[in-house]
Amino acid sequence: MKFRTLFLGLLGAVVVFTGVAVSKAAFAAEQFFPMLVYRTGPYAPSGIPVANGFRDYYTLINKRDGGINGVTITFEECETKYNTKLGVECYEKLKGKGSTGATLINPFSTGITYQLIPKAPVDGVPILSMGYGRTAAADGRIFEWIFNFPMTYWSQASAFIKYVSRQVGGWDKLQGVKIAHVYHNSAYGKEANPTLKVLAKRYGIKLTLLAVDHPGQEQKATWLQIRRLKPDWVFMSGWGVMNSVAIKEAAAINCPMDRFVGNWWSGTDADVIPAGKGSIGYKSTAFHDAGAGYQVHKDIIKHVYGGDAAEAKKNNIGEVLYNRTLVNAMYGVEAVRTAMAKFGNKPMTGKQVRWGLENLDLTAARLKAIGMEKFTKPVKVSCADHETKGSLRIQQWDGTKWGFVSGWLSPMRDVVRPLVEKAAAAYAKENNITPRSC
Image 1 (cartoon, rainbow, N blue to C red):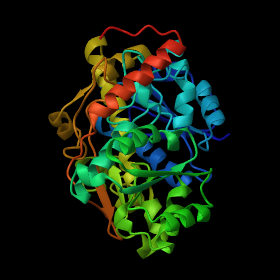
Image 2: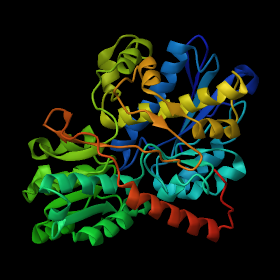
Image 3: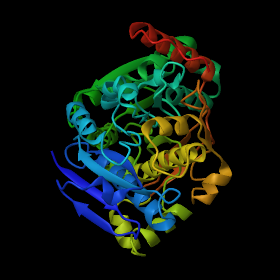
Image 4: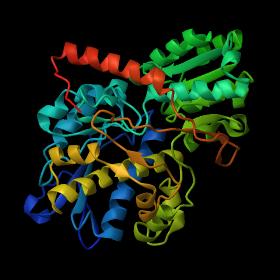
């Protein structure tokens, strides 16, 4: 297992340590963020921009702002290879580091998230599984330490069906529409299936579920099935190399790309570029913009890369997954800042950050102040709702860049929230959890 530790000092210097013990006294005012990453293996195309986005945002906060209210961010990478066992080992290695222990954990894997959920309240380390993980954790009355805002997989699936309904001319026109869900055969890939099944039954959709085994490099049989089925729409929950292979296979059977929609983990530059012109028209969901035209990107080029835009581009600036982890890292930083408003400008414990996450109120004005105006939507978390009322848009690849082809699509909360509460209640019963009163 490869570890890389980056400690960012108050003067803005970046020092890299490998396997070197560093005295906590050296950073008396540090806020430690563990980073579970996968820069190697079949999921590296997705994992590298994710890791770079976290690293660059934490570095930006130190260099541009002098830390979070004067408290320096420190962080350490641990390579998981998107492997659940390695991810849990990384968590155990990193959870106690820093002057107050881990701030929060971003597993960036639904499988790892599932394994860490029971540990969070015991270890006092909140989990921010932004847009992934266990959907039932949206019910904060039962999952006090888990947060999955701004949307869950179930909400995403319902918003996708809403998009299809608008494309075909209304809800009543969904009767008989054929939709194939091509999904990674893992806890992650399966997560959207319950909602898709409920909505298929409600609207008379002919749903076909097609699993793709890890890591997703062999899909010819799957796409031969799709060629026979001739679905009207294909929805994909993929990750890593699976995405680019799927898009190539879809192009090879002349699947209409404007009817092929990936979820928000199946729509970044590395997914579409390998297929060349064959990927033109491919769509995916997104809850933030693509490209490097926002103030936050200008600040990163200036403060992190010393004005070297070419070097920033080499490190994935502006790519979809890079941008997503800017949002993810920003959520964590702003949760710490929220906690500091209550507990004081000092390093926050995991318990205090949990409070900050649950009381996060990220306004449009605040987004503008940190360079993310209109980059993503405001978020307001509550005790009972750890998902929030987030929404998404559909983006489309034109061969060189992503552009939005829909307005904001809100989830079908009348369908999703009861499912969330039912699943959360079952989890509470199984694990002898008494729901909080919110």
